Length: 192
Image (cartoon, rainbow, N blue to C red; front, side, top):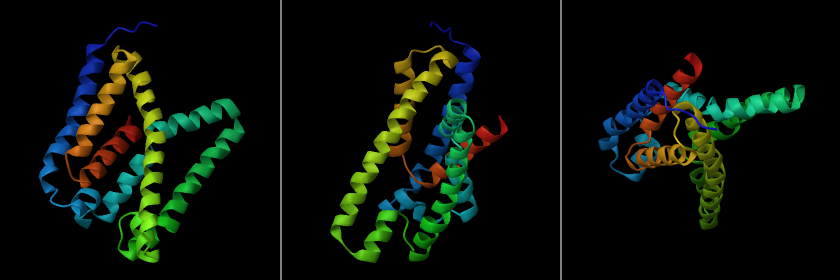
């Protein structure tokens, strides 16, 4: 299938990428330590963090996955979406609240503080890498599939564009900018 590039679509896409990179640059100087990089020095307000969490939860992959489940399995697919919502509530109350009370920022830090075992951080790091890889691969494939008809670029260009912009954002800074980018993404998902 051959798609022609629409310069309006390319321009709008470039504007959104430029906005997220501008957020990244504006907060790049705030990172002074690993705590600042991973936890934004604990300065992110809970409302902002909650909206960012909802923005990540309401991602395009979530919507497409739930729509696909409903399309393939009908009412049973709809029930999976209810389980998805229930999982969010469990993540908030069973995992996030105890971690907040412990004063830790990650699940691995909370387990390490509770059990004081060096193997826990190693297992948490390996499991985080595995989950990240299995999450990243479909995101990259989806980016290529989406950019192909939308912008008229080949599949590999969409994958490389998303990979490079994500890689640049990751190495350029402060964790609080991810919250702002997630809020921006939530706004786009809900209002467009």
